Length: 516
Image (tube, rainbow, N blue to C red; front, side, top):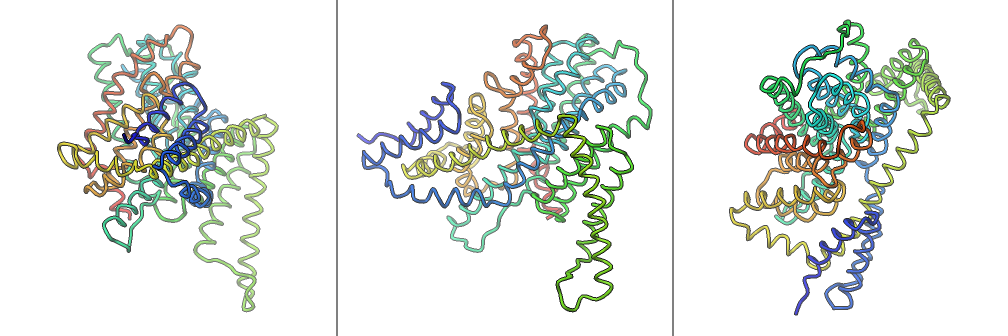
């Protein structure tokens, strides 16, 4: 009797994670055990493990993934510089006088923070500590308030720049290449991070619109659930609105504009975002506004000028004009360096820099450890014939390509109840994505559907991360049951958003097609 070691391996992994073992150790341990078991039973060639070193080297030299720690640092610095507080206060005063206005404010702030930080935990905790008590004081239904805060925080996974989209772009690009090789094509196309960012932008905004429509409709149908603000506050002035909203918007434009416009690689754009976040934090901590503006302007001018008119002073034919250009560029770099140094010094004295770096290293290590061990898991799984079995399962699904996609999306949704998005992305997707692409599904459209599905995993109990984050930050009077009940309607809205993208593929494919 042939034991289905590949299926047992997947089941053992889920079991180990549910028992509470650290994820990366669980993945590596299960892979090692099943490699030895397969070798002992004659079902696995142990020499395949020799490819592991090449996979690790390929991962560590992957230019796309270099952007992850930089984007994480950008998000952590913005979170610790308390920009979320300014945004929430200003937007609450702006929209709070209308029924459902506080909820709309939370969704809009969640979208802005998503596009400028991309870190779900930081956003949910910040809004749980600031917005949730305000909503409760003004008579909001605790379930609606909890669900709105939880869901708005998850927008950081679908609205670029996002760690999920960066990892997903790498996985889907590899899957797309495998599918093309399987079709006999050797002049292959790839998928870039910029294309995935462009594809996810409009669906992300679509979800924001769906949440706002739901909040306004619920406030109209059940006024007691989302009343207008009871507290007497003055509406913000134009200057206060500009001061709260302009800095993150400028950062969003700088980072996303550089990537979507093809001006910078994701790593370069992420470094721009990290420096921009640091300068913004320095401004919040009391560094001279003139110095911060001068430094930001100098760095921007240097980037544009050096790109349009590069100088190579090491060349023997460099003349006076080139030396003058070089001196000007050096002066601009010096101004920028002084501003960055002042921001770093103030962040260090304010005890903000060390926690930001610690959080960045912790999150980055968790992500890369999971990706590294998942590579080992997939190597053993494929060696046991798991990829052939999955391709066979998808092929015999009723409904052809559509039936196979429905099955995969349902599987991802169910796994989201138990597994983290990183684990699903780096373990499951490399196994199913090539087969789905071979069946004729557009890889860009498929990536967006999967991204929305994975975003939902943050909301599904019992292991939805947003639920844990909010439970830790919510006031004691908000119960866990109220949080779970509050996210239920939003899970339905997520599925609705997924359905709209399914029925109207141009929502995901038009923008990357227009730009690229």
